Image (tube, rainbow, N blue to C red; front, side, top):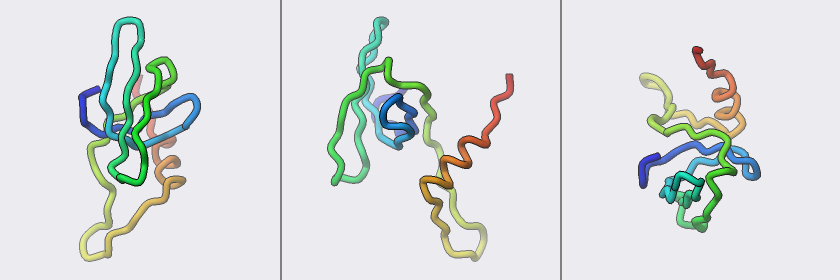
Length: 88
């Protein structure tokens, strides 16, 4: 986890959240501080042990060509993420 980058974090209590992350990790665990890009939301800390998965956010899904930009709901994003298969 790189300080200040944005991630999709899957936690035990909050489920999936999209946040900017500042890690304070140690060999024994530690915590991360999560910041929203929306100033209406207060930053908060979670224990590293409460994190189930971390996905680095790298792109935005947008419309194609001359079509107006389309937005994807949170439910739509969760559906897309669940469809991702991991090659083992």
